[in-house]
Image (cartoon, rainbow, N blue to C red; front, side, top):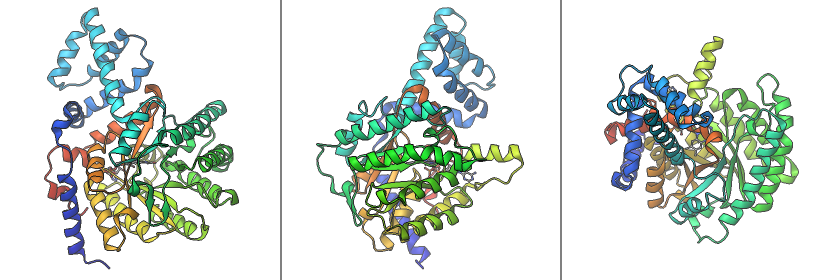
Length: 447
Ligand SMILES: Cc1cc2nc3c(=O)[nH]c(=O)nc-3n(C[C@H](O)[C@H](O)[C@H](O)COP(=O)(O)OP(=O)(O)OC[C@H]3O[C@@H](n4cnc5c(N)ncnc54)[C@H](O)[C@@H]3O)c2cc1C
């Protein structure tokens, strides 16, 4: 049992080292503007709602005039508008003003989307992915598009994923060696890494009939595992809302138990620490990995969970107990407990600790070192656009970091963009607290 006082000292020291390695704000003048907009939105619930409604309708708007009318009708419901938005409302009085406002707001949403989305196709994202690699960060590419409603859509998504695996093999072909991104104590780590969503691989993933969804998604996921194996790539299966988490976990573990996948590919799934049942799920996953006898360990990406608002609303609507913790510190504490359990479950699992919270990350690094493991046996993950500074700091300290890079067009990216904006404007989010200037020692305090 580690001595709590020295653990806390280690966490704070590592947190301070990471914070000192953050790039200066002067490197990203546009980011400061984004942050101001997010700050306005986080302070005012009506403005936040107006922003989300607007972002949601942008892809459907047919003209600049149409865009400006939508924007002003949403903003009309906001009582305390910051001065730049009041000025925008005045512009909408004339036709020329509406065209200018429509163009400016479309550019604004595109700019915001480009902060989180690295290109329309993996090939278009080549420059970003190669630059990340050269500067010491691996990546996992995510093809945007979730919750398909037809078989044709699911086939198309599976084809795009297979093509992405081919393209990624080429993207990473001739890049310089980066030993800490390519190896850990358990063996080689593939350079090419793709994240996929089961809800996009079948239109039939429904909580009332999980077997049907699993059966329908299985052939498409199996084909992707085969392609990843041929290409020497890693395939990661993302986790979505609570109602599909059992089916997704079972599907992944069942397919990886098949004989043809015993010697590859490298693959993984996601554990969400905001779920009250996540400790039991962690036990199931690590017990499976310990007996699976696969050539490469199962990568378990630990996250807090991206669907918190959705789970709370869904549970309230039905009068159910929420499946997620309702106090933020409970999710944070559980995240730390699960971090330790995953680190202790090596070598049959590879823990990938995914967070933008400096405390959660510093805690994982400290616990890994206390267990006597080298830094190379721990992977940290961040999202493009939210974790850029942390990615830079981890890479500067020579710690393996993988950046999750969504690829796709603006329409496919809307659900993703709204989730990221929700996260960035929530008052309880670590990033908001950091942006509000909460002192570092407070940010690093135990949850
Ligand atoms: C590389 C990467 C991959 C990811 N993949 C997935 C994925 O497959 N599936 C998925 O669901 N998410 C995924 N996420 C998102 C992740 O779940 C978090 O939403 C996000 O990282 C924010 O958590 P944090 O630790 O960075 O920040 P923090 O600010 O420390 O935590 C915010 C999180 O705390 C939780 N929370 C907020 N308010 C409360 C409350 N009142 N009570 C209890 N808990 C609360 C929520 O989970 C919220 O997202 C991924 C994140 C990364 C970095």
